[in-house]
Length: 208
Image (cartoon, rainbow, N blue to C red; front, side):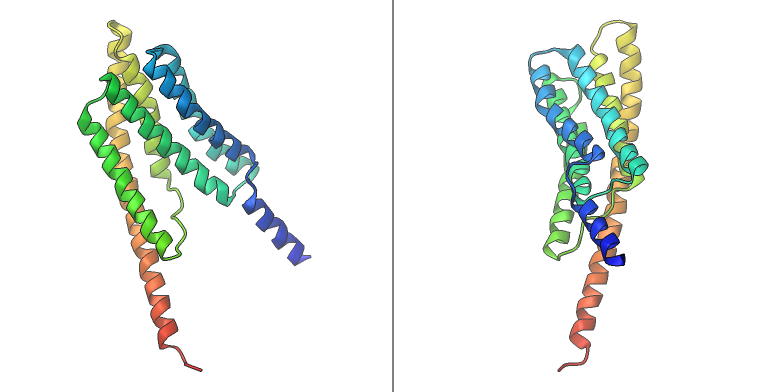
């Protein structure tokens, strides 16, 4: 009986088609849609896609908790969808002149640091760190910031209000994004130290 339960747990962990994973895949599918809308200057629909993406970013995590549908695919798809949508949005808005280059540099450098860290962990056979709450909060703040900043190009009181709130979300999002990066780096350092200690213990153990 215990073996059956364990096998069922492993099967759930390997499943791709779960509700939260489907939501993450939908967010990935919206990436080229957003690019097309930005290039063709369909700002209204681009704002709708960005806002919807922000909602799905929260919704997939809620669905995973509510339905107890956690999987290794979810650990991969959710952050991948977040990072890809974020980077595409940043470069799209930079191309449109909506955001300054220094904001893009802050976000891209953070992603580069995270990318190198994950590659180092993978090379040592260490699993990627769990997504921390502050990281999800940062992504959510940025996903609210970008449609508001795009809306801020409107030359009226609506645009001015959106621009103000958009920059508030953007600043908080960038700060939290780097705070989350620091948390990941601390966790990665701890994991590397544990792996190194385990390796030394194996070498120092009794030899046959």
